[in-house]
Length: 447
Image 1 (cartoon, rainbow, N blue to C red):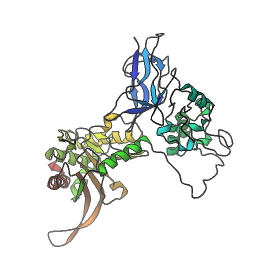
Image 2: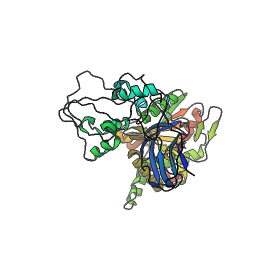
Image 3: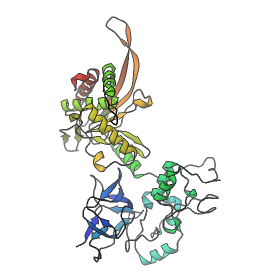
Image 4: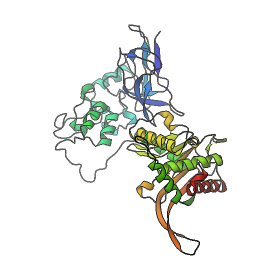
């Protein structure tokens, strides 16, 4: 009996996802646990594995956005009859449409309410997302110009012909924008010559190729950049954080002994191993302090405060698409060398776009370090529902009074703790930060 492949719920609050591409074609043999397709959520793009083995008999949602639980494909035995309802895909106006016979109808929008191509946002223009399947509107959609769905870009002398209309999927436009590639210089391999993600990736492998003779934008024009799913999530979560009653406290730690520990650990690193950084030592210090001050290792749950048994420390990482916070789970149980390996792994995968949903879930505390940019001190915004986030500045040599009445230059690092006052009080937060400071100034206390 054939098995329906449903769009999975990969995290709390996930209601829909966008299928970027299928890694298997209809008729291919699929093994259980083998990557089947790429799914873009509001947090991460990841490969989804097949839950059963068999032949991929039918793909009902080739590309585009679909609700959680939607049947997107069917896996069964060779030559097995397939009788499955069409997958429902959400169009740009939030209405359900149908994917008929497993194929998207040439990317045409079948909802005539879209007036111009330039008014279509990323959410309204998910790749392969048709509108309502009404016969009259479908006929009008076939006869209408592609400007109802595909963004128009007119440039002289480009890969698709002088002054030609460039049809491009939202994902292709996003990748091209991030990598500085002119869409007009590419020849699309999608339906009706549309530029798809693979075309942009292929061009990126040979370096950016701006369109020859492209006319510069007229002075004073405003560039409108559609929001990506990651940027929408950042905006939503930071807006939620701003509504929380937060307060900040700051302390400076003498990093003399922490730097000496860093140097000793770096000397012992073998070839191929991750080199420990000050962030790794700081992560260890915070994890150990969280175990002593469990009130800080907490989540606000509206009707309760949840105290967590393990220090799952998130590390804020800047990527091209925005900001992500992958998590090092059970950081209190790891050595500094193990933390360095874990940090190097998640940061590398974050910047390569290879994070999994589990890498982003379960954080109980967050560290944001801008010291490498020369920032002396800053205030980080809360990462709900976590009770606190630590902002770390650069290590700078400053004059410190000595017992003899003179001054001595010492490496100082300023830490600013932002706290959710619904969960934490000032004295509790100060006691925690004082412990972190003590661990950094005398690392032996935390080892």
